[in-house]
Image 1 (tube, one colour):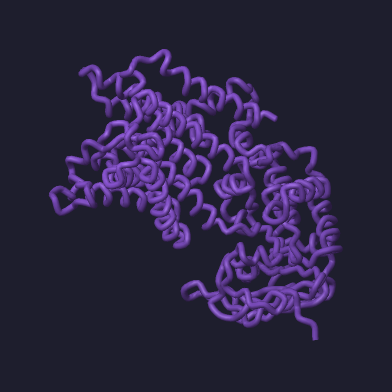
Image 2: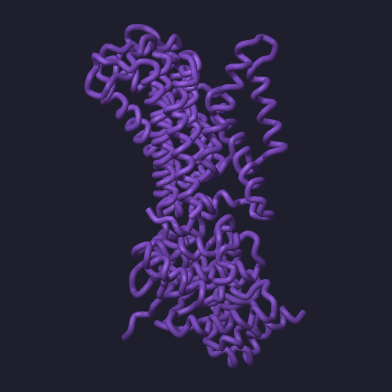
Length: 239
Length: 341
């Protein structure tokens, strides 16, 4: 039996009297691309934050390749090879695009290596032309890509993206979808997303959250055909 | 490489001041400039941890005073000033590291770091203030309570207590220390460590998510700042051959904040110029009896906060560069990508 890349066992998160995530069991294989969806308040962002160490679970365990990372500091989880893009872009606003990516690449290895990775990553995300710009002055979509570039520059094994396409124009969304498929050639990914169109573009296994628990977990087309999913998610969004 | 050019220009200017001032100033002027240099070192410590590390300390004077008292007590016991100078840096560094450990590893929010550092310097003020009497004597050194410690022996040629420095040599020591601290901080900021420090100031969460232990980085920055403030305290105690609890006082800590705000947050030159400018202003006002110095300081602070919030140096840099829209240019310059040390 193979050990999953990332696994949650009975992960539970309570805030006072509210149970945001209740006993979730979840497993991600190596090189898998998985989407987490669900209506607002379904617990997907809370679950995401438990995976990244930003929240410490009230109960249950998080395992990375069989290693218990429950309650580890965010920087420790990052060092184990998890790259995280948060919902609200977390970038170094006062620094240049290049410096943002460099700081990400520079955590390990030599300065020469870090510069090489920086150059390659900027090229890969087509950010070279704006490398000298200060990130705080860029458009929202560009800042999202800068953050994705920083995540990739740290050379993670697993990439976690929280709403990577939020607030993007249609063209930017198309490019982001293509980028995610490309990242998936070499990395496992978890993508939290609202937008069903976008999830179709990156076509993968989908885990649907509702009321702090997993409602269903299946291929994207079957999930969208599922009447229960339509009720809790699609129906609400249409309304 | 503009980073190297500006660095070389700054060091050259510093050397000109170091060697040139004794030629143009009389003894009184040189003594004044010596204490300005000591205060500029203190301002650099504040400017470094606040402007680059994003750590808001209201109590750099805690380390300043600790350095001064460490020097005074140690030199009175040892005679030779060599080891006391080192201790005056070491002890505040360790104290800052200890305090920083509780603040940063305890995940205390920024506002409370201001409160804690302020409280620490007030506590030290009160403790040292109540050490009058023979009971409070460390070796040969009576702490003297609110009267302070007079006749602190001056610096001497390292290893030779029989040759104390004359005022001109003391100037070389103080200005030399300022220049060295400046060079050290430029080197730190150009290094990978320094670039991560600036990144943490910009967004601590992102730095954590990239795998940096931001608590450790802030701890080291705070400890470096404490050591530099301690050195400033040593120079200050040595300048006046005297130290009293006022070095821990709130008036002094507020002054240091004003140096940095007026000179420019996020630069190293700014705090230096701010310290010299404000200290000069205070000494000019002190020479007449028309207006109160604190009133003028307050007015200066209000004017700058309202009209020149970035401080002098960034504004002047902006004028020279005439690059519209690049308001944080000095930050990028502080951490140029090309510079490798």
